[in-house]
Amino acid sequence: MNDPTWTPPAGTRGLIFDCDGTLADTMPAHYRAWTAMLGRHGIAFSETRFYELGGVPTAQIIRILSAETGVVVTDVAAMVEEKESAFLAYIHAVRPLEAVVAVAAAYRGRLPLAVASGGYRETITRTLDQIGIRDWFDATVTAEDTTRHKPEPDVFLEAARRLGVPPAVCVVFEDTEIGLEAARRAGMAGIDVRRPF
Image (cartoon, rainbow, N blue to C red; front, side, top):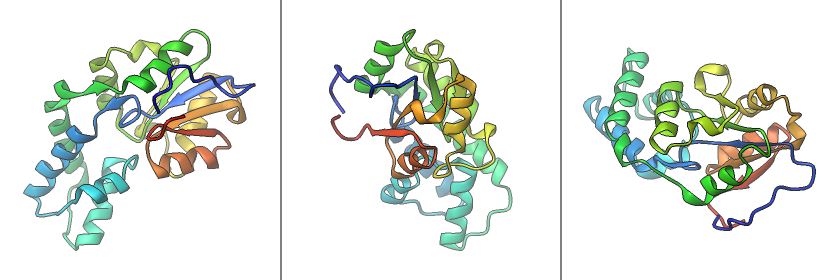
């Protein structure tokens, strides 16, 4: 995705953005945080598997990896806190993904904008602050706001509800297969930011 002249499909009334890997180049910092935390618990996490699980909330990833590796996990909440704290130690290295941020900048004040992420609120808020765009969005929906997560559509449906816009006229910007699947299930057009428009 590298076309700053992108225009929404006719009838679009809201734009919804994933955060990690879409608005912000956070994935290297997240992976460093994951490997630091999981290494202390004896759980292997390949970079390939990390990207396959992009968009899945931290607690859910820990449960998946525990099942896959056979390593018993007794305190998921403590591991989540450890991983999120480790990420915040690297947040200074996070940069905006300029092509997507340019779209948000172009439509800020012209269309309602939301962030909809599988990340946790504090982490997403700090990430948006780091790249200087938190106040651009009319709504921010995070892992705490829905009980089901991507590829289920709930995070995007909640974002549309908070924007006051019907799902069918929203466009979602995503960088993962499960995020794009969640957008499809929500009845929204999905833009894969990993490819040029």
